[in-house]
Length: 120
Image (cartoon, rainbow, N blue to C red; front, side):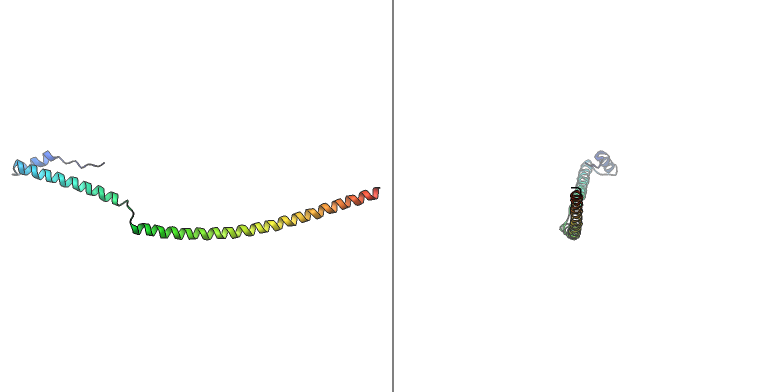
């Protein structure tokens, strides 16, 4: 917490040295101290208000977030479409490999059976 150093005795003595009475110097010193304290409190209050968001700030933030969210949703949809395409391509490749391996296996079995049948 900040404090402003204000030497009330020195202030009062200066007032007295230029002709003010003790009572006048005391009252003016007290008023000056009060004014200084009020100024410090107002400065603290103003400083904290800088950290407060206004309705306009919140609305701008909301608009920016909605815009960013729309961009993200578009990217997600593009990724979904791309992922679906890649899955379909992978299925087609896998099906070709399975069918090819099945034909190869069938051909090998038939070849082995023919070879065995000639030996018997």
